[in-house]
Amino acid sequence: MKIDVLHALEDLVRIYDSSAKMVFREATDNALDILATEIDIKIGKDSNGKYWISFEDNGSGMDKKTFESYHVIAKSTKTYGKSIGFAGIGAKVYLAVGDFVRIFTETCCGNESWSSEMYRKGNDLMHSTPKKSSRKKNGTYYKVLINYTDYLELQQSLEDWVKVFCNNALLNGIKISVNGKSVKPWIPETSKTKSYIVMAENKKFPCKLHLCKNDLHKSKRNIEYHINNHFVKGRRPDYYDQVKLEFRNKWFVSVEAYEIADYLKTDKSGFRGGWWKYGDAIEKKIFKELQKLGLISTQTKKAAAPQSLAKAFEKLLKGKFAFLNPNSLIGGLIGTKRPGPICGPSPRPPSKPGSKSPRPGTSKSGFSVVVSYRQNDKREGYLDPGSHQLVINSGHALAISTGQDKKAWSYHCTKVVVLILLEEYNKKNPISISKFVTTQSEFMDAVRAEVKDWKL
View 1: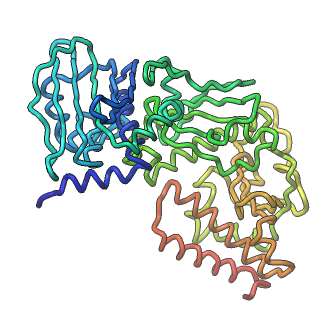
View 2: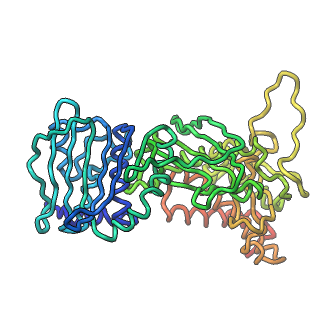
View 3: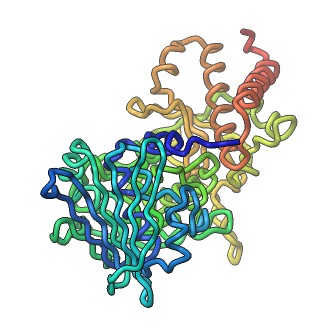
């Protein structure tokens, strides 16, 4: 079998938002991966009217063998899961943009220096024979001829991209300059910071929480994931609306996710499916830290779910649907709450002297299903990370649409409960959409059979 390499590269370029961002990210990714402490980026137009961008780092450089591998498409000297650059493509993927592209590379590893030029000849990707270079400075320099559209985008966005994608690198002392101007890191004015480690599936995730004095720009998400000092993705957590209004836009957490680099997407803009078994544990820990700081609202009143439904849930989750039992998913026990409105978790009796306090969600009251009116929350329901209560949002439009009809309300509550339990199960045990839908249907039918006054 043969492969159309140029077509493959064109597909890789389209993975990115733009070819300008692609060449920037691939170049800086490689520099950070080899532990460069300085990256000098320049952009300009030569005497022949051609536009270009260059990158120079002070990393270890390449010896002859590594430099020869550098010219092979999709051959990488890095190990997938151990770095952010792993595809063996790098900035040379820009060759797919047009036949005008030229990439000049010069490298020095200390005792030897090499240079070459990559270019297009029709649909063929070519490179000159590597030759010895007079470069004395350790590191790698390469210059890419780019089109006018990318030149304009890079000229306008380079400094901003450095601050977005490489801010952690800047904060950790790595020097990055654009056209001779040193880029300063973005440093928020904070009232409190806290560093801690989250353990998830035997992997360590260093986190740093920042509580800021002023509202953050909308581009700063509440949780940022980084690998090797390079930004991967930002997320607004599911419990965003549970944070007190005055603090919602004043906090963010930086997570170093090096241990799940093997879940990176090719364009490094996020993680592949399956990563959430780590992300869920990380974000639940963040919730507890926010709770300790008093940032989580406790003012929303909750009421017990209908008792007949609660009993049906309890019976089924100890029987046929035990695999969805929250005891195995989050450490809670199935149970029911006393009827009537409550505010926050129900009180526990005082512990006997010398006894250990029960772990959250493992008290006699255990895991419970409650109803809460949260009109501005877009979720139909959620698992409260603090109390382990499964909350049905009666303020959601679909909940409101059930009106006063008890059967419709029972149907809605059951649907929300099984969806949340299936989502929790899927985080650690990914299942197909078909299995997800079938299980949902079977669970709802089983509840209907248990609740005598629910005859739809």
